[in-house]
Picture: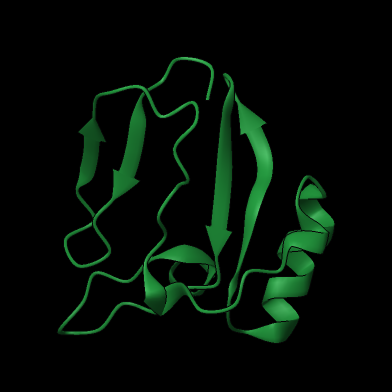
Length: 92
């Protein structure tokens, strides 16, 4: 991570969470609920998104890089009365 900042989104509230510290050598932690990581689609943009839309579960780490940050895309969950939803399932 170029700027050494942690950026997370709370999957329950949708709130953007920012953390500090040097995470250059720290492994990123993803929520267990995201499921299987399909790393073979990392960096493949639309191909990765299409894969997740077909698979309907899991996530692809580092689908794209924005300003030095790898962007993970989870399939996610739709919005319900109990959750704000997140990921592709929430968007489509």
